Image (cartoon, rainbow, N blue to C red; front, side):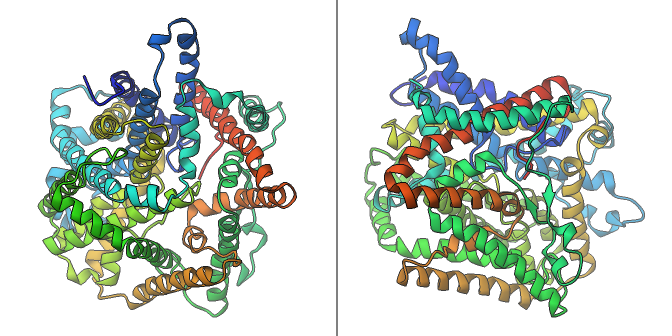
Length: 638
């Protein structure tokens, strides 16, 4: 098997072997035990923990059997494949999909009238309606490995695997088209790729830094104490995850701030230290601004709520749109050169996995599959094209933000293309079959915390920095997508038919997403609406205000208000991270103020150690919980 030079065949094999184990690990952590999430962080702790384990194996190999030691190309391949598997199996990707596929047929009752409202409009080839298969899925006590049950799941599972494969193919091709501009011309920093770059060095040189071990000890001791306390409460705990400000602000209008925790996560402090100071300042500053918007709206008597005042999600969508449109406008000359290379079929650059012509052909094939898929589900052509245009604009924006600044988290809840199209245009513009199809597309558009596209580009960045050919690794990424999707179906269904999704799997994994999606569909059909001008206005305001911040920052470089901080800080994830990023801002400001740039660089290993310490010790607690079936300490709940 020759996937490029140096050979990466062992990395591909290891990735394929580990994929089912990682899908089982994630489902057990996020759905069965509901103990926390790994897939909502920009850098996946399960992948980092796996890389560290491979480096430990590599140490004796390098000493006693150097020809058998893992190469950097093989380690990068494992990293890339497991990132794709984790992104697919995430709480914002395939886990909601597996919840929605059987949900409507099982939960339709005479009281909710779903059978009369929309059951006949659901795309049958996407869903599960067989009574025997449904009963086994929700009640358990049986096995997946029966011919009748396997045949029920086989066709929809294969169709969704094809869909997800096409989705990832388009993302990879878009990354190839923008890679040279963002890496070679703009020289973006890719902060999230820093630790994977160090960990894929087969010598393990990163562990030779003394300050890294100091940071590792601080975070590791914190997680060790909390983990031991979760098993034996007599052990003292130092847990900074449980304080919530909102119970102390019960009077109006201050009660409108809602859920506002104060938390301290060492790994967020560590990742935050790598961010620019103006972004760190903007993160917690704009978090307060968003909260004050809700307070102001309640003070003047406006109705508060999701898709109501102050339209936080819709404003954030406008912010994202401004960021990606500005980036595309700034690279208009580059895109012209790309088009010329496509016409002349210029050869791929040394850091490109394939040529621009191959990328545009691959993107066209992938997009055609996606459009045909959703049109077969009920969307008209114009809606399908609009849907994917919005989706890939969001994907490019998330990828750009991660490449430029590397925020530890990002989400953008509840304003995907499905919600945006039906809000701005009104549900009267869509037939019931189209609305039903968009209900299933909600599974990967509810939020964008575990988006796969940034991980692909960060892998290409690691390849570039390490002078590793990326062609074979790009193929390994696509292979990991298909095998990871199949592995996720197997893991989820194996657990469900054994334990029972209704009895032993937590609410959001088997119930909450269905409530959100099908209650929304019921409302769309029973209460059709026209264009929502308030929503459109909020999106426009988010776009205009973000562009205004960009202009201010360009003209006044001393201004510490960054538009990206405005875009990132209204969501669920920001509530978990703003206080830790405040600590990172204080630490970085003090170090730079008194020790300068040299002091900043000298402290990088310490903060990298915070990330490693929490990911390794905290990650091992999740393994202990999975192996013993007990609730252990979870270092991240966002």
